[in-house]
Length: 195
Image (cartoon, rainbow, N blue to C red; front, side, top):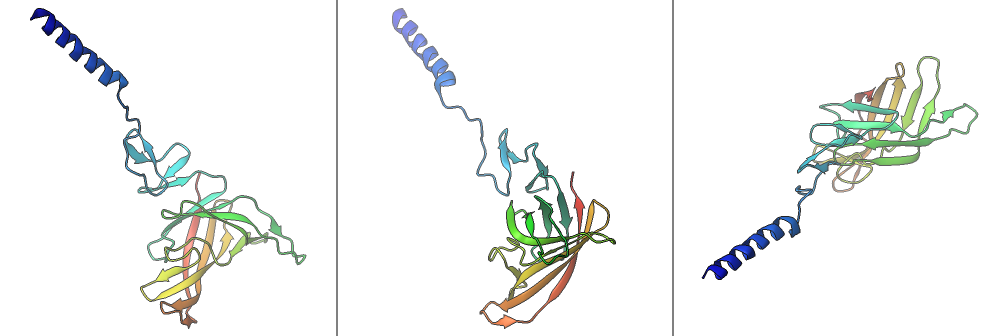
């Protein structure tokens, strides 16, 4: 009987050691992390290369400006960043440059040849037409209320190097049945450089 008890004890000890060292290990114990978050020690959160925006993460970038609004359709909290700046010279070439938007639902949307930068004595200005990725119903539309889709244009003026005052124009609208509507609406957003 003693040899059986000894063998049983050795077998149980072997199973315990093997289960603790041979079994699966769970490093990332997270569900699928939403809104540009990453699994960090079992919880969805932001890495050191991201800004924590509460329920989502915004990537840290050079020339990143952030605006927040309670009443600007499809642009409640948005990051605007510039990859390069090529000023319009007035020579008729009207150069465009690469910029991007970052939001909770769309962690990054870039647009090439869509934003113009003007160097002006009273504050440099920007103009972007048909902003990408602003709404849930198409990359270049915004649902206003429950009845109308509009495209968005953005016009801004720098006030110092860290602030851009913008006017957001909702235009080129149509109703949910596809009928064109000449509606236009304007909102204001203030973008502040995020460091």
